[in-house]
Structures are given as C-alpha cells and as structure tokens.
Image (cartoon, rainbow, N blue to C red; front, side, top):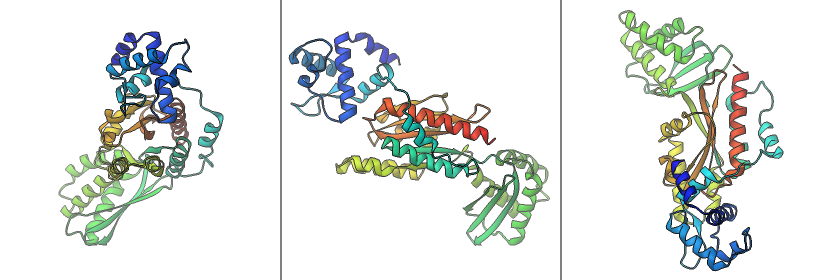
Length: 354
C-alpha cells in the first residue's frame, strides 16, 4: 500500500484518469489502448498528442507498457497492483450471482465436501476462471479406527466418526506388519479415541505411547505412528484442495508458451506443491486478498492472478479458503464481491453444522 500511495501522490488528476481508463479498458477487452480511443472518453477535452504524452509518462513510471512499437498501452503488473490498491471500485454482488452460489447448498443433510465441490464448480462457472476451495479436516469425534491390509506394501486406515462420516486412506505400512500387529494397533487407538478428534488423538497418543512403550509391540507402535501421520497430512491443518474449471484458463490462451505455463500451474496444484504458501496467505486476517502475477510464487510461471478469501468456523478460526485464478486481466470489481460472499457463506455453513 505504501507503493500505491507514493504513485498515487505523483499522479495529476489527468494522468490518474488516463491510467484508470487504460486499465479498465484492458481488463474489459484484453487489448492495448491507444491515445485516440482515450480522447473520446476523457472528462476534459484534450488532444491525442496530450494523452500520448501522459501515457509516455506513465510508461516511464513503470505503470504502463507498449507490447508493440506502434500499438497502444497495457498496464504492467506493477500498474495493476497500483490500480487494485487505490483505484479499484468493487460493486455490489449481483442478485443472479448470489442465487447461483446459494443454489449449490441444496439440502442441509448433504455432505460438506460434496457441497464444497459444487461451490467450486459454481465459482468457476460464474467467474470464467478456475476456482480453488481449501476444505477443512473433519473435526467430529472419532468412533472407531481400523487398519486393513491390502498387500505387503499397502494398507488402509479407516476412520468412522461419531456423526456417521467415514473416511479411509491408503498408505505404505512399516515392513513386517502382521494381522496381529494391525489388531493391536487398532485396539490401542480405539481405547484412546472415544470422544476425541484426530488432532486430540494425536496429542493423546504421543503422551500415552511413552507410558506404554513396553506394552505395545514394536510393529504395532510403528503402524500407529505411520497411520496417524497419514491422517495428520504431515501436520497440515487442511484436508484437500478442490480445483475446478481449469478448462476455462486453457480456453483463454492460444499461444503454446502460455498453454504450457498454465499446465505447469495445474500440475503444481495437483501435486499440492507450494500449497503451504497458499495457506500462509490466507492466515493474515479475514477479507479478500488479491495476488497478481509473480507476487505469489505459486503463480509466478503462469501469468495469472489469484483472488482469495479465508473462511472461519464459529470460533473465528481460519479453517479453509476459497479463491479464483484467472488471467491478470480479471474483472476484479465483479470477482472480489463474489469471492467475499462465497467465503462468508461457507463459513456460516460450517459454523451452523458445528
């Protein structure tokens, strides 16, 4: 914001209007804007030569760029940042957009994850970009835990929650596991698990296993540790990242280089590479945040922007996030209220379900 204030102070009323009109036209059309086009929309009557001089000054300041020698100007990444921070006007959420988002909720009996899947699809459809929904872990108390051997190097850990929700995950067990060690591991965890969430169980386990190390077979102890590690997702507080609408981004690009960059972006998301950075940016307080181009290394190769907002549970704790990825010429004024409303709606939904 300091940078935005500095440039804002250096701009005259005329240069500010030229800059704003260039950016707004570019965001709408994706095309460079020429001086003759601007003269027809300026508040005061000025010549094309005067507007051209102002655009050259803005280019010298690093706010505009000339993609071709004789073409008009487009905003730079720095220019878009200044515009978003100091000149962007966000409108009210349109009724049609609100209804589209709310229509995904359906019955109150539906599974939260399925509902978040639908919300992600609605977001990508509304914004014509790709949506990201970071879902929270299931926080209901555990009812039962079971280990199932699938092969010598594959096993299944099954969690049944008190609210009837069932989840399972395949993992590689420590070598040498036997039916006996699997039963012992499950019995040990079930004796500790009643009434606890996964996080609570992890803390209880660390204390209890130190007291009962001699009682618990080495194989069973290793299985308990590896099974819980799978559920804890290496300590991460989030369950999974839902990505919807990638075809929207691929359809916007026609150059092979741009297509390859977007494929790299989605490959990274598939592997959850750098998701820690995505989580970090949602933890700096509530409200919508906008990341343009290389401001976040997750998108540095894609030429994309991210509009993201965290959502909270009833304790005002950030438990996930919703966002939209698109080209840097996103319609920020429309997308910001959509993302903001969706995050608030998801937060209320999670809070209502306890």
